[in-house]
Length: 157
Image (tube, rainbow, N blue to C red):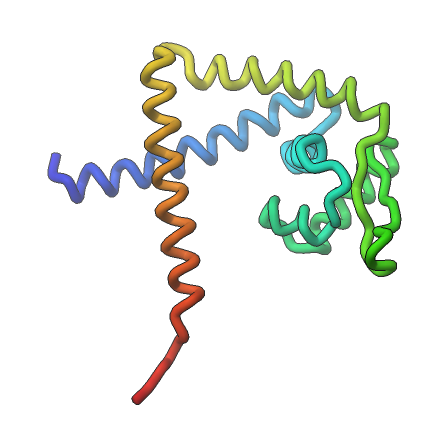
């Protein structure tokens, strides 16, 4: 297999793995009455409690209106709460409620199970190597996107 063919195959496999992982995560999240999107919101909030809604939308790569719907549902479920931002009266900051902690514990357990199934047969050293390689790819892509944004478009002499 040529390098070009191998690179193309790698792109397809990365895409397929991401899609399958999302599908599997959605299936597993249903066991706790969740979906992958709500799981992502709760997990990000656990790491960044007090974050503004717009910042969370950026982190999750969601449109603000889509995130608002997810947050509304999580508020109605009693898992998160919106509080006024002391520095900006138009903004809201997001916090987990005590009821969210057992749900997050269940999601962590599902995550361990999900990843154990996904990574079955891969030794820890190969896992570490994959993580390092994919982290570098992620960094390269972020840099490429950032560079594109810095270059003015349609510049003519």
